[in-house]
Length: 497
Image (cartoon, rainbow, N blue to C red; front, side, top):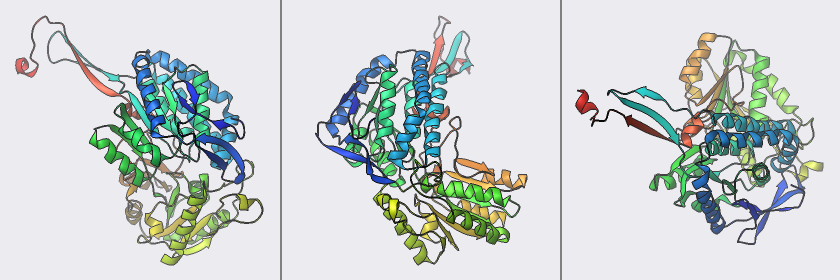
């Protein structure tokens, strides 16, 4: 998409303007002089049009053999490979994270698309012996219909791919509303789908405010599945809205992820992990390391090493290959991060580095915060409990492994956690006892791969998982089939007693 081009909604295979006649701007958070694009400020009527197009397309798409659907997804994946750098450059402009990370974001979409394309020749059910003679039993997957997706800004193409590709391979049609801060990446994905032959109406995109469009995306009677990634507060509202009509919902929400560092850990490796986990994507990941708990015997050394490294991180425009951390996504998020830094100071935590907005020169055109580290954090503090979604790391200490596990679990969330240790017994015990959906040993809390389920426990999610074959359960229904070729009435348990 070229600079300053007005981008339209994609509905029923056509690029059309919103009925509102209004648009909004998408600007680079590292340089607000850089206009990435102009997008439609859509209305409920636009959403309804997209959903109705998807519902009509579903009648034919569900009957396309799954291997053929997979072949189309393979073409989409091949195209994403060809255009990886262009997509990534645009994504850094609209989201701000460093170019190495946006290349990874695009690669994740590529991986997910190839993976789900392959599922077109699997989508396995099972066969099982019947308890009756001359009777055959099996299960199959069946699609649900129209799926609504509400996606966040921190992974502008990866997360949409997590939702789109399993839904499409199962035979569903989709309507996606990308985050208002990052619509360009999803528009690029729609363009690729269109040009690679995905039929009209199978994929649709409307842009605009979640507050304005959410009700229509959720409550339209043709919508059978709502998949949402975002805050727990909004996810709770999505869940409540879906429950009244028994719609399926898949919710991936907040996190307050912890890295445990034992006294026998490789501290150089642990510091590398904490820096990447806390400040990768400017801390704007649901899996970001926001809590670091360190054994008291190595806490001073670990903290000194980490603070020294954090203070030296190069912050700036993500298009600069040498930059290590980009901006916050927008002014509102910048203010949220700065407010939490003030909360931490007022609560008595020790600010050891960072803690302020970066200003002067090019920094004045963006939303930059210094990498921030607090020590002396206690379990009663808000910076220990609440998701900040920014480059703020809280450090606490522990005396024993048992205490570390208790502290790790001391959160309403349960997405990701990690432990650094050379003790295999403690590693396996932590794997078992830390209650999260994702766990790492001698690695940071970020770095999920597409062929394992992604999601969390407690207030992080509602029990579903994205990615891997687990995602197929979100976008398909099981059907049990019994074929009786006995020529007689067989009454299952009645005749089998």
